[in-house]
Image 1 (cartoon, one colour):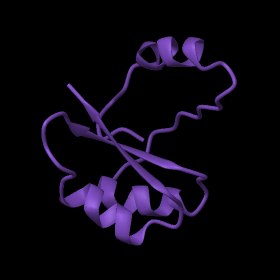
Image 2: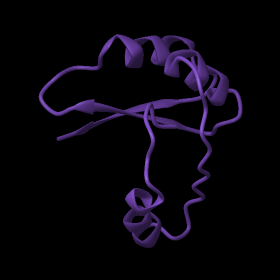
Image 3: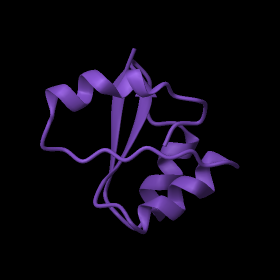
Image 4: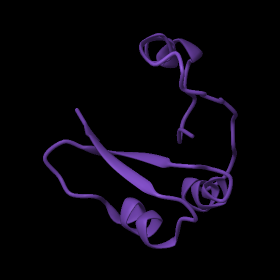
Length: 77
């Protein structure tokens, strides 16, 4: 899930790098927090980004506490 429109080309390099990983794209309207919690009920792993050099934000901390699957918080630039 992505909180704004994500071009399909953005995911292409990752699909190429990890061809054995299933990636499904779909647009979801509404507040990302509840939508991510809903998605966690069907997921094996929920991956959430955070800015490098900072700890997990409020949304990531909430997901860690309430998600129905493991949550990985991954730093990015």
